[in-house]
Image 1 (cartoon, rainbow over the protein chains, first blue to last red):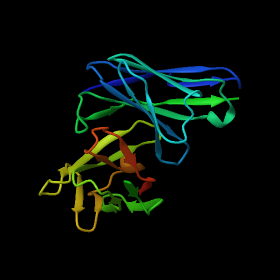
Image 2 (tube, chains in turn purple, orange):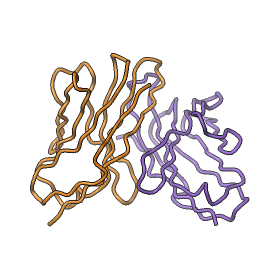
Image 3 (cartoon, rainbow over the protein chains, first blue to last red):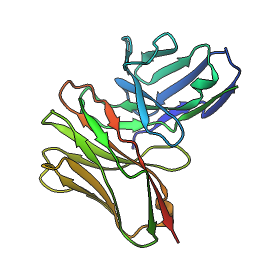
Image 4 (cartoon, each protein chain N blue to C red):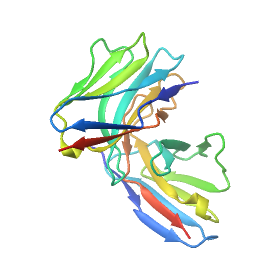
Length: 117
Length: 116
């Protein structure tokens, strides 16, 4: 089956620094990637939808300048948490869609655990 | 607006017994898909089963079956013959087809613990 990777799998950073998380589709081209955030014992909350070559669409309440998303190629999307603070500590998960239709399967990455000190 | 509700924060089941995890949804879109995912402590999202809104039969995948009651807008997951490895968090999710966004909206999740 299709594989989505994320890097790094975990990261610890100091408050005020920026952190970049990569999401790659390894064996298929992903026209659309989704970024989710998950706090402990809670549900996944969609942050943004990322389409290759265009600006990401952010969900209501998600700060665009705080969470920069770039989808420069059909196999790579990046999420940059700028000027991270302890409240940004969370589990970030990406998923990638293989086709252009809403019914196409989404494949999830293994997630990245961010801890901001 | 679409909404997914899982009313069971936590569930216990004895090993080898069956368990039902509840999920109700709300949508005005006549075309939608319903998913169940398993998330073990490692964090990865494992796809379990899918049910399309127009599917006539309830979906089944091995020990997993989906009890789809369209009129009641419920899509409960049934796990038969529970195993210790089934202990995890389970999420119900919905995807609307109209608008072609492909976005998945998740329920709050149910933590399942299988007792030996």
